[in-house]
Length: 188
Picture 1 (cartoon, rainbow, N blue to C red):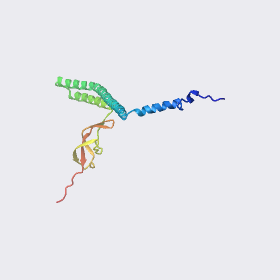
Picture 2: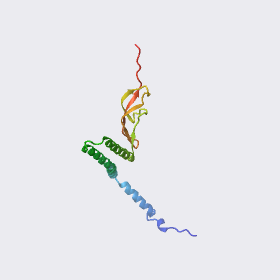
Picture 3: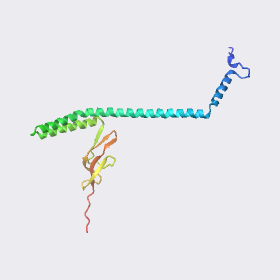
């Protein structure tokens, strides 16, 4: 089988070089003709465009984060509205009827409280009720110490305010009373 030779590529011009090589030499010479100032301007332009693009991306992500927060907050608030309505109805009924039944008011308030706790659970908020646990400064805030012979030192014996956690992020530390060893009287 005969080998075909592309005659155009092997044509030699008057100067003794092939045409493809001469084109490469010209393009390399053109590249070398770019002055350092022009190269600096080109790089500055690229840098400014990159900085502007990064700034636009930051602004866009800030806006998206803000919108996501607003949507999440509005969903949570929408879920809370029935609870607020129930509290308003309970307060109105208790004030209107001067001889109101206190037990039914307390029962209704407990139902509202259960609804609210259920809403917190649904949104991923967990309650910290650490009574009887060892004090952890990452989750608890000690309000006072209680001398106790029944508990070892550092055990939570009273919860003043419950704490709350969302996705392993502390929203509020539980405010607690912590046991301490009772001081023994020293003989004189």
